[in-house]
Length: 206
Image (cartoon, rainbow, N blue to C red):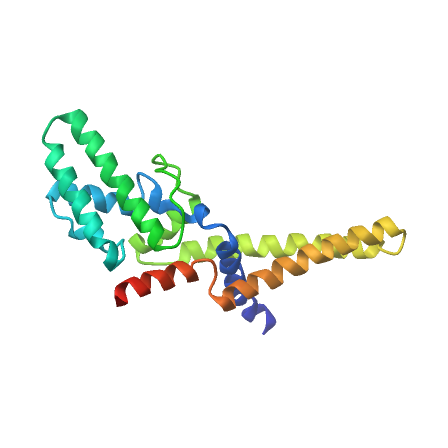
């Protein structure tokens, strides 16, 4: 029974670990091949701002519409003007989107800089199945816990041989305990995106 209940809990713990990572690590919305910019390009191609409005709060919609209209007006003035106007719109959109999540804007990242786990998450939505990413995350979580557990066990076996060995054990024990407890704590409290989601929901309520 324990073996069957371990993986779901472990996966939840890994998700918690991912949520403890600073929000910039999950900022694939600011990459030039990320979902926000893809929608921005589609909006500019069709001259319809609608596809990007879902990425911003209701109170920020006017700023995005204004930026979009300015960009569309300039795009017809040559390739150089179009490129500059497009980048202006991309940066404005991502900056406003990030602000709505309660996260800082640190500039647009080049295509191909999206983290593997983020790309895998997007691919799972395209494929219609989370199986591959579940397997990937479960493997990473299992290795993370087992590695720390092995270090604690080895250190504990030597902990009585000297004060220094005892301190090594305490260090390994604290790291292991904090890792597991921290993951679980983040999962049960909603994780690092809770603030951003709250801000997003507040924006839609206004």
